[in-house]
Length: 220
Image 1: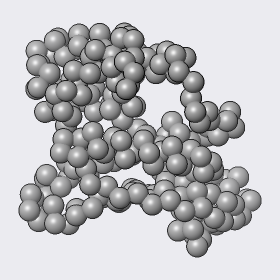
Image 2: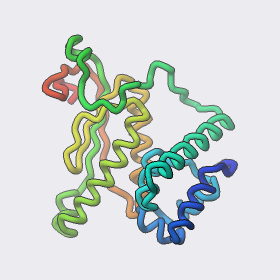
Image 3: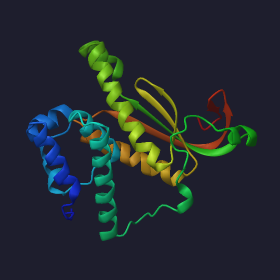
Image 4: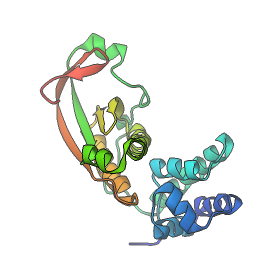
């Protein structure tokens, strides 16, 4: 894998870590990542996904301004990396949903009736067993980490988080391309956790009718 030129994000991450008086190992444990992954981020050898930045900011207990600065630095890092290497699957300008943070169908959706969407369903495998073996508090922390990763990943890719029920998430996309991107990104994020989150992801596309804050249709 080609090395990405170190940018401000890695330097800023290291500065916040040192200000918090944390070693790489301590930050890795707090955020749920491996030590080598934290080290690669600080050296600029890996790109951090939005969900990763949120988890790091939470682990570092950054205030709102510090968190915004870290997010902005990561965006610039990603932009520079994209400029260095062409994207084999560029996203069309129309693929991005400017209302990505809206949960559920809009008024326009309701007026139009059935429309073709691509739906992504993700769920934590073995969640019930994990709850029994580790207790409610540990299961709640796992569910919160799952929710944070899903929210931070699907929004920038145009996904609408329709339902989030503990260990399961339902997301709707107008673009099948973006839904596939989101599925791949989510699998990468879940695999980077320590230990990795065993999450299954399914995709289907078809007509669906907006109903009571969600959708109904054979694609679901």
